[in-house]
Image 1 (cartoon, rainbow, N blue to C red):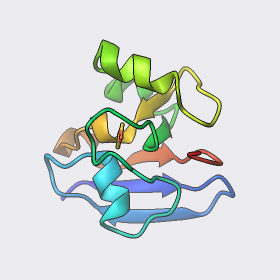
Image 2: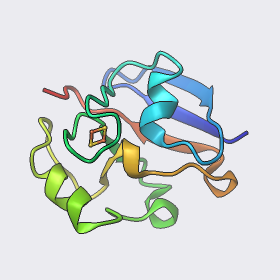
Image 3: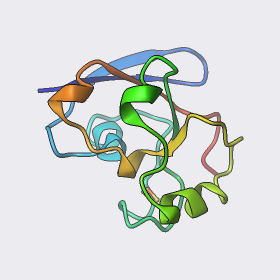
Image 4: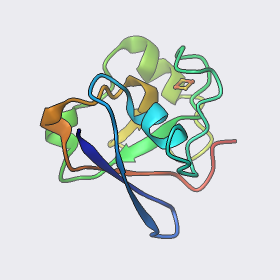
Length: 108
Ligand code: FES
């Protein structure tokens, strides 16, 4: 099962196992990781799953997967950076085993 490390704004790291096919938002919620809210349940309607893909993973994960994701990032509460993604749009696969995701200082 792929492992994801979530790094909080204060630097605290949490390693969790995430089922392949799940997304990085659910990976946080199902494992009690703070910093990702996922208010809309992954329907691309809230941006409270905003996160930053670690620089070492951005080439593999890539940028926003759709215009809708790009548009929703526009309403994210925290600063949007080149490595910003919506966690609900990052689908976890074995290729992403070891992924490191940083959570922003706020989602509202
Ligand atoms: S959970 Fe709402 S946009 Fe990702």
